[in-house]
Every structure is written in structure tokens, then in C-alpha cells.
Image (cartoon, rainbow, N blue to C red; front, side, top):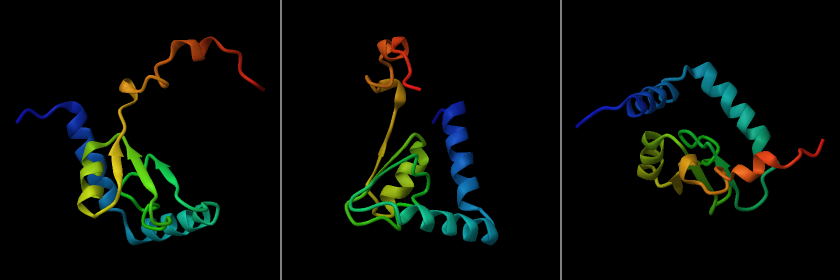
Length: 104
């Protein structure tokens, strides 16, 4: 199996998320609990990582993640997470969006 730079990074970053210290996990949980109170009903978690917030969200919530390793992990844990590939997203790649003036 060929290992690409992207897959190496995905695995290394996933391992980093999994090996957080107890203090970092505690602080992240406190932060996510604060966010959770603003989520009502099914929620979409973009950039869900290892699924910390998804664990706190109502049933039926889904996650999107660019890291294939994290997606597979979440799926193995029974979470609904899909791989998001920005380069394949027509809305993300719509060049006309850049030509529109920003509402400031």
C-alpha cells in the first residue's frame, strides 16, 4: 500500500486527537458543552474530528470531516459521519462566488 503525504498527515493528526492529555480533554469537553446548549434538534457538525461534539448532540445529528482516518473511526463507533471533499463540492468551487461583493 502506498502512503501519501495526505494519508500520513491524516493518520498523524488523528493520533494527536486521540492522545490528548486529561486536562486538554477536560477543557475541550467544557467548551463543547457550552456550544451544545445552542444546538436544538438534529445538528450538522462540520469538521467533526473524532466526534467529541457528535457524542453530545441529539440523535440524528451528522458530521462531515475531511480526514478519512477520523471518518472511519467515527463510523466504527457508530456515528453518522461522511467524508467531505471540498475539491468535489460544486458550491465550494463556484468561481462566481468570488466575483460577488461582500455584504459588510
